[in-house]
Length: 254
Image (tube, rainbow, N blue to C red; front, top):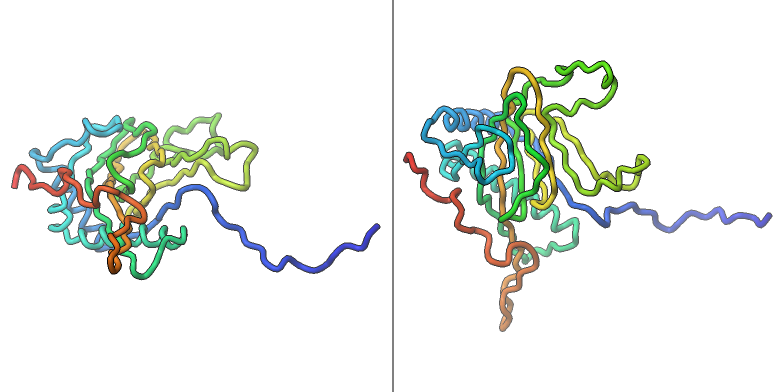
């Protein structure tokens, strides 16, 4: 038998060539409290506008949130900065970051999702944006309520959100990629992800409110004009970041 080479590789790196990058943020306690108070007022206000007709959810209370609501609650700048940080981080990971680039981002729509027993969100993605996100505010303990003998020891999906990228990667307990990611929400958690990423929210039974704020955002990375050269859009929304959505308008009851 030939003697085997014992020297080690000069380099060994495992990288992520494919698949979307997502963000998992834990908001500070004061921001969580402010968002709960803000949504309490929106839910109590009989003049609050439903956003349900524009959404996939089988949920009764899906109410519009305006930028003025966020500003009044004192969380507007925090949320916008989180979105921009997500964009910058992803740009760095994909080697699309240079110090002179201009990074623009803006939330363009948001709504409260006040979910109760048997309500759910079928699998869907979001349009009219590049980024989507969700902020969890209230989460009841819904695990184990069904108490099915045949399902003991298996994952309980009630109230969870599942992201679906590629179901084929789940075959044979594939170690190379996760095509399905299931997350049990908790108050204060903020998730951000590409708007095209399919996701679904499972129903639950029994008492309690599962409350969150869902939102969409645009972004654009621009290389400023050099001497004798026009500005160049590197990535993102080609038509501009700030579009004309209800979010920027004046609330009808104000």
